[in-house]
Length: 152
Image (cartoon, rainbow, N blue to C red; front, side):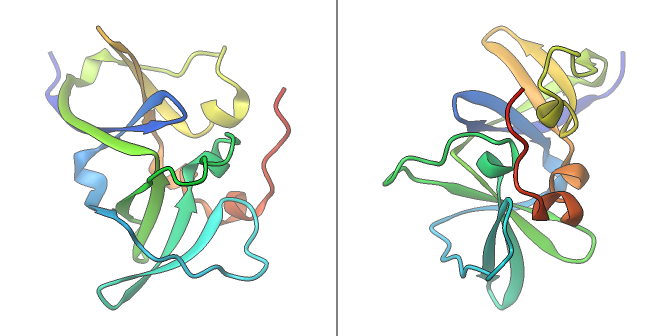
């Protein structure tokens, strides 16, 4: 049996996603976002993380989900992107759990292509499915600039 992987779950529009804990720098609430003119797509803007500037990406926009209802709290999951931190805005952060590496399966063909390309695997749990986010694809600059595709 393969070594278990520690993942942190988060919610987006009622679905459960996760990131490996090793990719997460920190979780922050209540960040002030400065919009960037003409950024478009999923880029919300820039944030100041104790003197370090980071791009903020709204994963709702990235997955072509409806906008967050007015007044609904949001959480920023800060990940390292090689050239600096990136904030991934999610609805809420859940638990840190251990999953066996061999329990992670390929994303099914039934997922919308826009979702399937951003998910590196799925994990079945008693309480439902957890979609493991592919961080590098989710924050790829070229893809962030595009407006979301229409739903199939």
